[in-house]
Image (cartoon, rainbow, N blue to C red; front, side, top):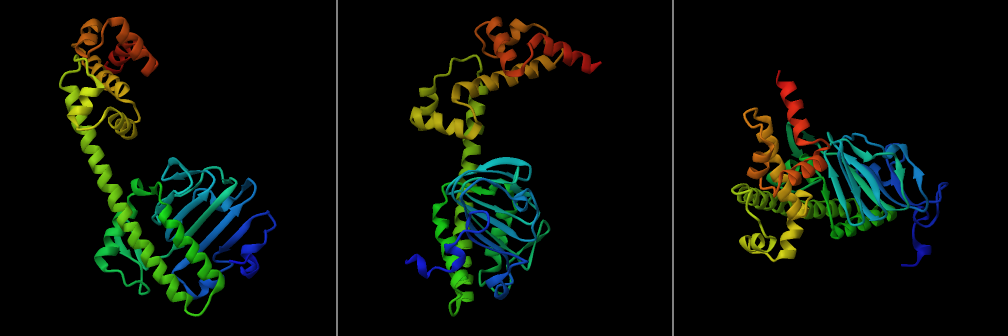
Length: 316
């Protein structure tokens, strides 16, 4: 498209040197005809800037961000995350979210806030009369959005098209643009429902995998477990098994095994009947007392003996 045909707001820099649009309560623009959208923004930042409006906050609607480029240090319900290119974040009205420092890095980010007719911790999602999505569909979608564990979708590049289409419809405001925007948003929510459902299913499968792996390893901590053998048990190759364990636990397989051994050691030490460190080291599968002591100290910042003394003092 010829850049000269684009609306002025999309062609020219603002006073901060940024391109894009931002419609909100004090500058509603086309949103006057779409009262269920309280904000829409699509901005390309050409330099790092402080924006206090992007600090952690609450909104009265479903807040959605999509990152085209750049990296944004974000927080959602106290959990720090990085919003990276092709990441989509979706938060409910009661989820505090925003840039930790208010710093907006060089890059491009899009956002929209949809104000539902009904939606709270105790009230099912009801988008309003503008949407023809079924009641059950909206309720299920609301339940998934309401869980902050589902707040970020990675590699969600298929959502970029929706923000591009919304920006263009809102910028040009051609005949019937209100209907087009409603249709775009309904298709967006259908895709979002599918993506969140798939994410939840993958998480459940991952939880089951780690639970079974944990049970297997705990059945005999003294055994010398080989990664290839464990991978075979779960019908995986060594590379895939290693990737899955690290993704789901934060540890490579061997480190995860050590973590389970140390968890068992702590349980035994906290039981005052167990005072022999060499015996605890053997039960937990460490090759020697020295290996146990050094590993425990490295992971916990204190020797097992000192940990035992502290635990005994607490019990008195």
